[in-house]
Structures are given as C-alpha cells and as structure tokens.
Image 1 (tube, rainbow, N blue to C red):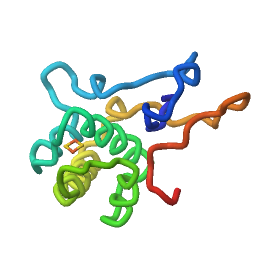
Image 2: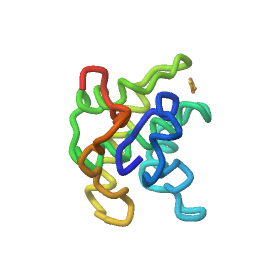
Image 3: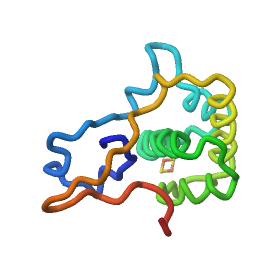
Image 4: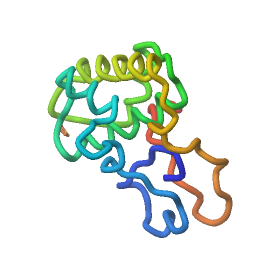
Length: 134
Ligand code: FES
C-alpha cells in the first residue's frame, strides 16, 4: 500500500481509501515471471497461496530498499511473514538469488514506487510488514 508492504490482516479497509494498492497479481508480466517470482520458483521457495503472496511482496519492498542484503537482513525482513508449514532456508536463498538477479539487470519498471512519507491523520497506517523488531 503506497509502496510499502503491509499486512492486509491488520489493515482496516478504510485505511486503504485513496491509497495506491499493489497485489501479487501485479508482479508477473503476462506469462513472464518477475525475477523475484522466478527466484522463488528456482529455489523451491513457493509455499501456499496464503503466505507466498506476502513473502513475495515483502521481498519486493525489501529489495527495493536493500538491494544487496545479507542473509541476516533477509531473515529480519521476512520475520513478520509466518509460515507454520516449513522452514525458511529456501526462501532466504530465493531472496538472495532475486537480489543478485535484480542487481545484474536493473529494470526500474520491476519496482513499486518508493514509499511516501507516512500519512497523518486519524488511524494512521499499519506498520510495514518487516522484521519483528523494526
Ligand atoms: S505454506 Fe503457507 S502458511 Fe505454510
């Protein structure tokens, strides 16, 4: 929402009024996967339809802001996305691979707009869907 990864389960619909929304469906270009989707596929990091969209969009916002992350930074960025079904090892590998792929072939059209300053007013916004301590 407005360039930030947010948790839809913690967002009231009224908070999205007049906001720019992006969902996972916007990542692929027709049949051509976004490099992040391709990396998740290549590293067997795809999980179910509940958690994967969140992982993908969190990865997108994270890599936009942190294009050369360490494994620790990746794990911290994904800490707010919970999957009770598996480990995170392949997901971390996929994010690292996506970072490398995106760094080797920069394409501004693959990114959402940068997050604007937080909106003021009543209700505010939900915190970004990043690490627990951030
Ligand atoms: S595979 Fe999606 S929550 Fe575990």
